[in-house]
Image 1: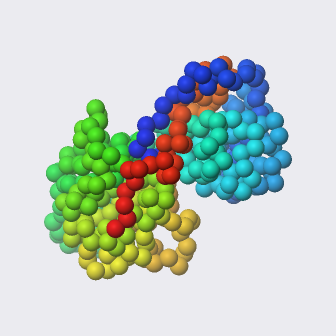
Image 2: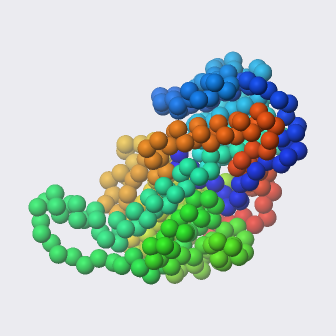
Image 3: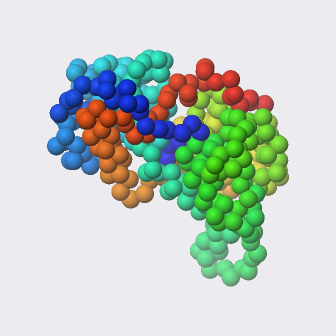
Length: 350
């Protein structure tokens, strides 16, 4: 769930979009759920719409005729790429990220896309703060010493004044910056382009990334996965980080080159890493990341508080009421702004 959006702010759909929809008292809604995963609590939707849960390509094809609405509960799904959107006019995702929707057919269409803002941003920020506390207070070693029944006095690092670089000031990055600053940390921000934000203050552009990497104690990645960000943090970029710096990734796994990360840790260039996302999920049992004392492996769960499935259903249900009333939707995402082919301000891989 911890899936993570670009720095572009989501917004409400336009009034024109609302007027373009015909009033439908009981629309047909497809709900994509990953095979083997539990259903979200859909009971409240069944009073408002005809709901069809689909998990496979065949089920998706069978449910497509006459269905204009998709409630996407599997951000890893490949069904939209394999089958296509059919007659869909609106897609709502249970995540913030929209990776599975970034197909040419959907980007170039008039399909309205909305996401579930406000559900996982703060929990992810809390997870980031938690792992930074774990590192600075050496809590992993404390647990190991307790298990060994060893009384060993140690000194730890302060959190106050620690220099942090957050890369990707989208909804998750925004919450992370605010929480880390509230905890007394000194936070710099990098986004696509330099600008001043009313809430966050100055945001540096990607042309300043390498300089800021060299002065950060911790680097937090909240980036989406695009062709420009894939492999963005590789051996060359790790060499630009100051010795002993730590990496936290709650964006997308493929933004980091895993082998380069391991080599940077082995060389002592980096002091540790906390990873909630991976290029291939679930992480294979043979992957060396599991056995590292200097890496925290988390199963893409940083944003998943108890009850989150119900909260995303609530987000969709509120938008469904707006859809049925021909009103603009909340938290609409402009896929065209996220399209890498339309961006001239993409970060460069060294």
